Image (cartoon, rainbow, N blue to C red; front, top):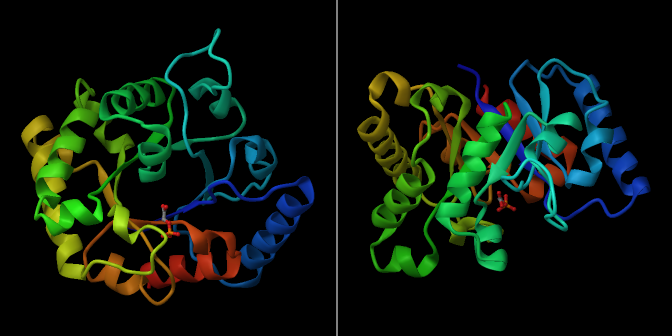
Length: 253
Ligand code: PGA
């Protein structure tokens, strides 16, 4: 199966001019090279979703970086799943470590967001991962198990093929330090095992498990191919369309 590449543009592209420059470069890269038809997902800030989604390519999709679980109403400052869907999103990143760290997001909330995203026909990209301290204390497996079990509560097993789990060690995000391929593979096995326990093998196998944290063209092979992951979630390098697509090509070579 082709490996998926997801770009998390975070809080970047500050103006219409910057956004248009980015989209111009992206289009050029998509047209210039012989990009194979692997799935590409770009998650810009929500205000840019509509403009991004005008880029129509059969293997390019869009997503948001967060969403609230309610459909509509008096929730000042929030954005609902149907809103992003109507602006062209098919995916949504949920439970990113930056949301957990700076906005205090808890597993229970993330669980509600996953349910709501699925109800609205969005594919949630659910981030789990341990901090540096937790890793040091040997708690990686315990932390990931707890995060995943809480996130997956009451999720309908027939929806597993519409869920992506991203293993993102918090210490690897934005740091240029990565786990070894073996360490990543161990976590993939753990995630698979938990999903099988909760949902049965037949359904659990439908979920894609990807890696995120300091993925670039140099680390792509080790973090995705050697570790047997189904794709990657890319932060910084997704801001450079050339580099971003190069990663996509490497993991699909
Ligand atoms: P990074 O970010 O690739 O810049 O480390 C990854 C992420 O936050 O998803």
